[in-house]
Image (cartoon, rainbow over all chains, first blue to last red; front, side):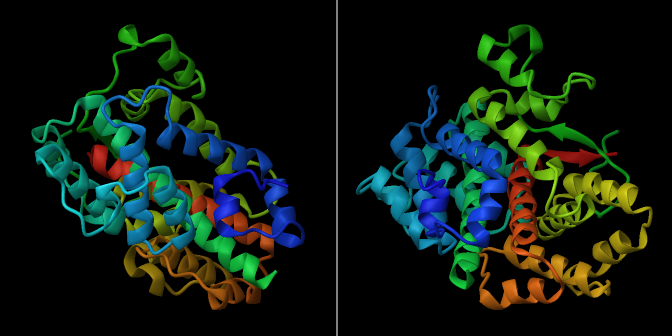
Length: 157
Length: 190
């Protein structure tokens, strides 16, 4: 089946049954989800956000959201990275600005304001990297929600 | 054209970016390829031109977005829009809520459901199936998203099968994604 994808693997999706069939119906969408994981975590052109930082931030977000299997997946992609813990602070102004955005937009995007983007700029995050960071945060918050439901659906299958 | 829209509405506002949109004449080959994924019959929006700073992400996102909302089978179009609105309500993305509430209204031919959702959120007095979908969408959109066996059972009790639950999850989670871009990289103005 689609056992090669990060999301289905992390959610421990059963190989057969109604959930496996439903995912097979949406196989193209699960492929595009995997391609989006690649684009968010391991892009060919990472800009000012290297792969290990992306994985550490994804680990941090999945820990904030309490999705343990995805957190393990991301922890393995950035072993020992200091920013992977939700309690860790940045070591300079740029890191601090990045963490403030990641944490706020993961926990309560409704509270975001234009000041949050200005804070990234003031912290030295380039224009293209603001978009790359927002894309990473947004993708991981999609992925972890799908994982939560796949996990719940798999239990009852 | 400069008043920020802060209340839920079905009148679609203009989206004003906080990040400089890509200039078409400066687009790289990769950026042009990613932009070709968007429908060619409409002008490329500022939103897409902002996202075009990251062409690899945009190139995968556009077909995924369209597929989740429009691919055949499974959950009805209207109920996918309801999941999108539930997420946009929780995340207070006025722009996404306006676009998808108005699509819901177009599909269903009624406006009362969305008026109730905008007023009362998860407590909106809807028919039992719509209410179950809304409650699930709202709960899934919280952080942390705490969905368990009883939440799945509540959907099944209203007749949703596994395919429909998967489709609802995809459309709701997709707006956890879209809201985080729309609501942070720009703002709705009227």
